[in-house]
Amino acid sequence: MPRRQPIHARRSAVPSLSAFDNVVLPGSSRRRLLVGAAAGAGAAALLPSVSAHAAAGAPRPLGGYIGVGGGEFVRSGRRFRFGGTNCYYLHQQSHYMIDSVLNDAAAMGLTVVRAWAFADGTEKTEHPLQPQPHQYDEDAFDSLDYAVHKAGQLGIRLVLPLVNNWPDYGGMQQYVKWFLGLADDSYGSETPHHDRFYTDKAIRACYKAFAAHVIGRRNRYTGLRYHQDPTIMAFELANEPRCRSDRSGDTLVRWAAEMSAHVKRLAPHQLVAVGDEGTYGEAGNADYPYSDYDGVDWRRLSALRTVDYATFHLYPQGWGETSSAKPGTDAGQWGEQWIRRHLRDARRLGKPAVLEEFGVRIDADRDVPDSAARDEVYRRWTRAVEQESGAGSQFWLLTSRVDDGSFYPDYDGFRITWNNEDANPTRSTARVLSEHAAAMAH
Image (cartoon, rainbow, N blue to C red; front, side):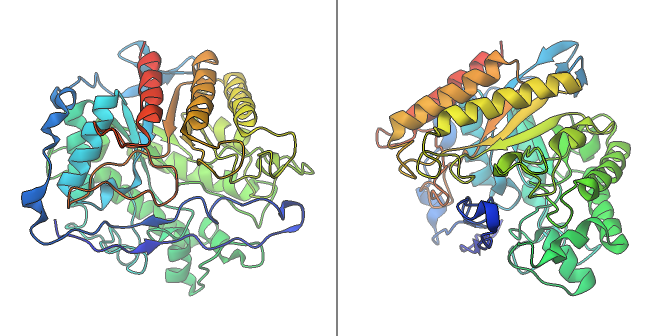
């Protein structure tokens, strides 16, 4: 694969609005990611060997597709629970970078990784999977094909979202620009063009066609079509979808019902999830994550017949749920309550639920002043998942080495690495998460 120079994939600031003036809304600052990582000429000769991860080299049996039953994930007739992670960049990087992070995931005992399966247009990505509507670049699919192949070798399942809510890698706004000529690089209630993604007929048809191409493509490394490969545990409709122009939640629920049925027809043996953050959509609630501000009604989305499991995310610092934003609020405690409420509500719905993104930054406020405090927050949250019989958790974000042998930079403050260097500042946090994965596996 050609080496790539860094390209900033930003999320523009969200205008402050009335009751949420003090909230750093998702998309404004949580992730400022690079699409690629720089690599120097001739760096391959200097790369450290990933064979040091001996435990990662032993294949682990997948045991067929993951199903659902009795409100739980099921594998080969037995309950399946997991500790996992996110690594969004697998679909765009070199085989070396893919090997590095997936070997690390296996060494940590992580059994599910969530990675993007989209890259739309030429403006927000160097190697788009869909450079133009209904056009697909087979060369650009090499990284995603290889990631599926490598994950299967290691016994790791993948969760693949099919479009981004945010402009990174094109996203929904790229579709709106393609078909309607309306460009929004930011996302606010004053510029609701983004939400036409859910209602425009041509856009919905293009999204469906892209989903069909991904799900039905034949992997050049495995020889299997994606829908034939149990390595792919689930397809997600989108990463963090929302529709702020319709606070009732109806628009997003209608879209998710249509698209989940479409994906389920294409991939009947694999699971389907929405990929939303889990906001409750309660009219009149002034607390952002429980409010209807984003037009997301988590319970209605999760209850859809063709949605197999519920997802929810957790970023209390970005949502204003901290002592500095709200005196008397503790980010760790607030997050634990968020987890327990979702898992209990999911049991009432009869659906498995996954805490599929979570993170806190060190020194972002006085609630998390150092790595020891962060470790305690993660222990508290993962313990809540275990105690409430959660189906899985996936922290944001595991990264590893890039093509010049250095580590992927910590662009958003949530990076976790797994290595044998004493200087690794996330060593203790990685151990907490590895221990959680082991507990979930039993």
